[in-house]
Every structure is written in C-alpha cells, then in structure tokens.
Image (cartoon, rainbow, N blue to C red; front, side, top):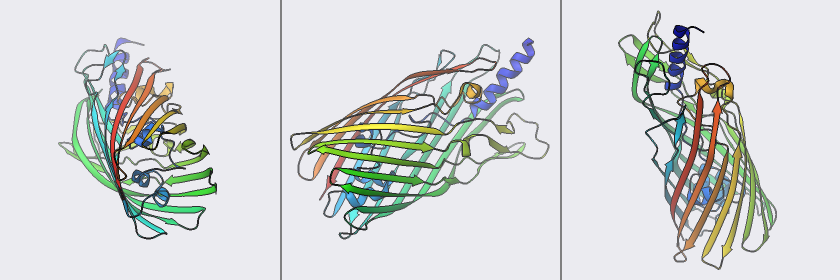
Length: 392
C-alpha cells in the first residue's frame, strides 16, 4: 500500500473512531451493577433482589423487599477505565456515577417505586493515536441516563411481577479527523423511552427464579446545525434479557447465577448519519461498528457475618462485542473487557440504616485489528461504589 493510501486509511479510521459510542461500563457499554450491593454480587441480582434499585434491573423485586412502608437507596460510584490505543493513553480516566431509588409498600400486594441512574456513557480523550502527520486528536463524550417509575405486584406467595416505563436522556459530543478534514459536533442531547418487565418465582424457601426483559430504548435523533446544513444521527440503546437462579443452602448464605443477553447487533451493527444533499464535508455517511450480541455470565455469593454485616464476592464474564475485524471502527469505544472480579460489604448501623461498599476490577484485555491498519485497543477498569440504605 502506498504512503498516501495508508494515510487515507488511517484518517478514515479516525473518522469512525471519533464518533463511536464510548466504553462506559464493563459489559460492552452497560454497567455490571448500578449500586454497591449489585456490584458486590457482580451483577447477579435478578433472582434475589435486596434493595430498591432492583426497579432498574428487575422491577418485580420490589415486592420481595423486607419492608413495611418504604426503602430508600442512594449511592455513588467512582469509575476509572484506563484506555489505550497503540500504547497511547486517554486523558479522561475518572467519572462519577450516582444512582438512587425508592420503593413504597402500598399494601401486601402492591409496591410502587422510582429509580434513576447512569446506565452507560463517558468517553475518551486521545491526543494522538497514529504515526500519520497532522492533528489527529480523538475526543468523545457520551452520557445515557434513565428515570424509571414503576410497580411490583405480589400475585401469591410464589409469584411476583413488575414493570417500569423508562424515561431516557442521552447526550453526545463528537470531535475528530477524516480524509475530508476535521469535524467538531458539540455536546447535544436527546430524549427517549422504553419499558422493562420482570418476575420472580419461588420454587421453595431455598430456591427461586428471576427473569427480566428491557425493550430497545427508542431515542430521538441527534441534530447538529453546521455551516453545510443539518447533520443527524439516531442512536438507540439495545434490548436485553436476563434470567437467574438464587439458592439459599443455609440461613445467612445466598448464591446466585445469572445469564444476560444484550442484543447490540440490532443497534450497533451500523449507525448512519443524515447529511444534506450533496454534502462533501468531513462527517462520514455511516459508521460500521459491527458490534456482536453479548452473552454475560455472572455468579455472586453473599454471607452474613453475625446479624449486622454481610460480605459479598462475585465473578462476571462476557465476551467482547468488538471483534478483531471491527477494531478500526471502534477506536472511540474501547469496550473490550471480559473478566470482572467483585468484592462487597454491608454494615447495619441500626434497624433502619445500612451502609454498603463494593469494588469491581475488570481485568486488562486487548484486541488487535485483523485488517490494516493493525491498531490495538486496550482497556481495564476499576469501580468503587458507596451506598446508604434506609427502610422502615
């Protein structure tokens, strides 16, 4: 390949990279868990929920909470995902991720609640990723946040069901370089919606099944007004389904295993830009991200230590949705970690107040492009969550 062709290929790669969605979480671009308790169990919480943030994962779990009137769960996570392209580090490596939820027990059958939290997002900030000349900075910023009001209903002693409406907010900024020149699309925001539904079925006091489904989250189009006309882009969030089994072999011991399927290919195979007629600017026509569907396996163990403390540990695995042939289209989305180890602890301060802490480490993983240019993307992650719970 001639030098000019290599340069053009490199710049085209950067054009795609600059507008890729961003590695914000540990299973593709989805968080393993949304609270300290969920993360301590490595995300294995669909069958035996323990706190109000279950409304964001399996709404039916609210009916299973041991409350008389209300439970509040408020928390914050500090997320550090060091990323590299060809050995170059991203400069944005620390993010704050708040989560909160409340569940109100209306009567023995009905529980109402609302949850809110960041589901995915963040971004990258690379000063330079290739040896080609020119300004090749790569900067992306994305946030995806949802508010979910919903209900849970205890049908009988064995079955509980629940559902939410998800009111979604997404923001995005894009900046990069292409063969036609540099482009800068400033921070913009859109809104959308979707639904989540779930159930919990108790086989016996020691064994129960949980299942939850979240629809594709339909988002409005991003719109950027440029000197060449209006640029648009539609980026939805994927549908996913989770099933889990929780086992309590003895008092004070909980073991849960979950399997989750995220249908990334429906929304992340190719994302097109809407461009004015005759457009010859730097923004490409489409982005062939090529993300594969992801199957996630999570195992969590929780043990009571006396009557005031619980300890947790878990393991979570999901094959990277980005394969070697798709690396060059995802330089702004280094969502390639696969193995995660979690630890957690909760402490009761009184009959009504409890504090929880968790740590999740996603082990370093690298993927190298199988087609020229042979870029290598690398990612590892560390997440610390703190949570305060109040119930009566």
